[in-house]
Image 1 (cartoon, helix red, strand yellow):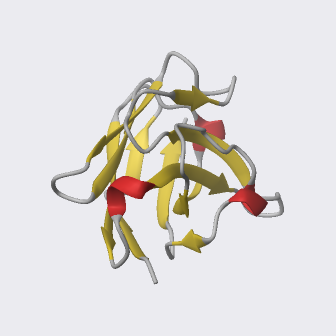
Image 2 (cartoon, one colour):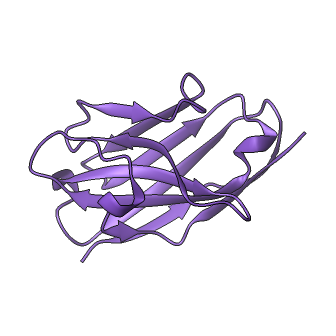
Length: 126
């Protein structure tokens, strides 16, 4: 069983940066692909970014490409989401997710992930 805890959210102004953290425990961290998703009020949870178990592959939603960067530290069992040039439409609860993979695939759908954190709120004021 994998437990995920997100942190780093907050209230910022448009154009600012934030770095989200996800700490994992249980399971074998470097056997998991890791993803970030977000959910705004009244909206479905949507894909933001994902990284393969070996960091070889990364994938981003078009809406964040060029502004957000996903990374991971397998020695510390952590995954990060660096968010730059934040916009009001980035306001949401951000969730970290994990799934065991035997390859360097990068899942991008909510149904592909088995483990989820509780989320951290990001609010961007315009």
